[in-house]
Length: 448
Image (tube, rainbow, N blue to C red):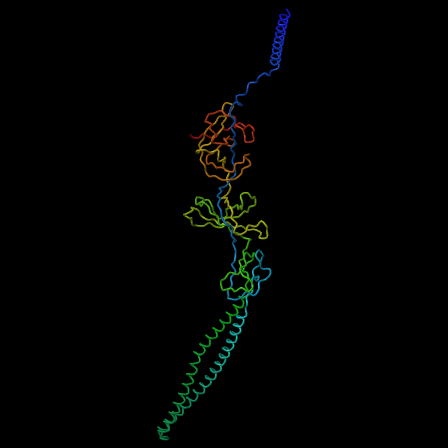
């Protein structure tokens, strides 16, 4: 009896618990159903795929051609020794990296031998001058004797004429005529000898003149060599190299020092041959030492090489840069740089990112039925360049300049490689995440 009543109690208890759980579940369901949110239908525009676009806008650009080169000083001087001698001294102010001015002494050579040569040449010149003066005295005396000899000759001829007349008159004999003829011959012989002396003076004078010129040249050379023992710099600049030391022997032509003028630099830049028709003297050149370094210089094209290098298909433009040589940021010779030539004057052209163009076409988001649909348009590319354009709000550095006109405000798909077909309805967004403004103007139609 007791076990039967316990079984009934257990059955009743389990049934009560089950009914209570069922009631609780029904109550919870009712509460959830009463507190649920009413679903709002999603707009059809938001259901379309999001596409990042940029607004086409005219931009001021220039043709840009880049190349590499090594900076050189436009004016530099390898200062040589001009005589063979020992280095006697070098000024304390002449050291590598020190500034110098034109005329400053770089080194002093031993000049003792050249001083002696100059003295010998001066003494030789004095001796020859004395001989020249003696020759003048001899010439003057010979000409005086010639005057006397001619006078004797005139007198002898006059005496001969009188003697011959006396013979014809019978007042003299033939022997007296012979004596008068002998006197004439003697006077002529004396005059001839003096004439020979005078005529011989001119060759002696020419020879002496040649010796004098040689002596003067030797003296000038000795004095020049004496002056060349003091080596000076021909230009203002900075000592780039000092190649000698005190006591060292130098020979003619050997470089003693190198001086460079940092105020004007020249940068030969190699450009592709295709750029030749666009580059001209006067174009601006932006010089960069390191792409990661904001430091740069602005130069100008001074001249253009008329010859292309067939091996590399390049030509050389020479950019000149004026700068303060005392600046710590001055460009120095030997620096390998990137030169960017800005060709001609800036033009206002339509520019799009390079990645927006694929296979000669761009994708546009055109207004359609209150929304936007993708349209593919062919374009012609004029040229490409690398530069940041912050006005577009993207970090792209590679851009293309279009020959094809686009309406300002046209929405260009930023990534032309996206696999979306023409006619697809999309939701265009700007790079910052904002919705693109619907353009009222459609881009000009082009033949696909």
